[in-house]
Length: 132
Image (cartoon, rainbow, N blue to C red; front, side, top):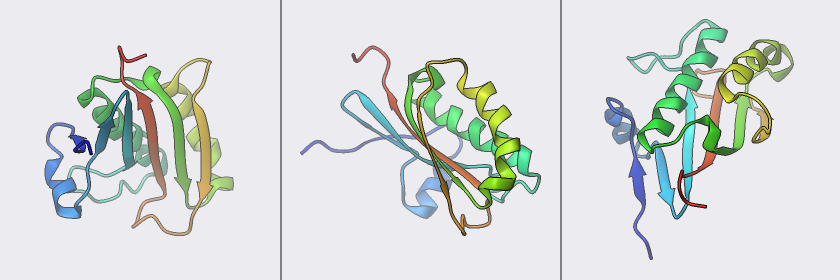
């Protein structure tokens, strides 16, 4: 069995060590990224919802970069929302700015009632560049 190849963005290892999970796992030609939230440097939720969503994308971008990926390499997106109906108008422009033009990755949006104090979380699967 192959050992997990963990990926961590610079400066955030303590967060993952404290909670006992990896930011991402490289497996073959795929990268599986754990859910990213809009946490400030101290780990607390950003109170402004739009800023929280942007921070979640920024944190995701840092994990992708640590693995040599960009949003162009993302093939599957799952997002979690505490109030999807009210939040989508804020999320969509940020998502479009970050994900870019078509063809778009798959996207599954899930309504939830708890995200440990956060209101938005995003996880992805990406294909590692140069591994077709």
